[in-house]
Length: 266
Image (cartoon, rainbow, N blue to C red; front, side, top):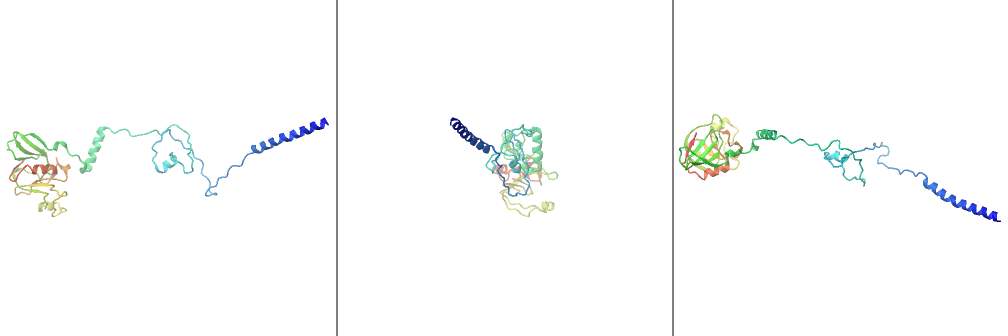
């Protein structure tokens, strides 16, 4: 009786031990891989790509390159992790331009586009010493040096920068201011139209008018002291014989002289 009871207990224990081993075998069994569904099952899938980035984000050009290699958020809902690698490209920058080369480059650009040429500070209006023989109120035009002087007396004169006639159009002599006009109209003389048939036959006064804001007519000649909407031409030989000034300077001179004032052109 005792032996039968012992065998029965051993058999029951064996069955209890077998159940956990069977469950463990089921858990240890390889689970099937989850299937991945593509939009086009028949199309071959591209190989997986590995990208390396630097610890700090560099400028990679944007656009499609930035999409491929940048660190923008992924539309799949996760952020790819890239292996950190040494910076093969580094933060390359162009070396600074030599100051002399930079100045030459600016001069070349100004020569190509004269409207970008800076106004030379030598031609700013200023009070200077004057040792000539002309009396106060006389205008003296120094054609070679591109200066106009308004004599003040007591050895002083106001000096303005000017543009003068091109080679073959310069002249010298003594005139008087015969008329003064604000925002004058312009009618090119026949001699000028013969040289430049493209010019308009008449232009009303205004900011676009080549005579500028003011004009002082010299005797009965075709010459004038007038303003200009091209200040970059001051200090050059540019006109057909007229004396041109910056608009702000000709306005200042216009208010200081009267009709009948003496003008000496050298």
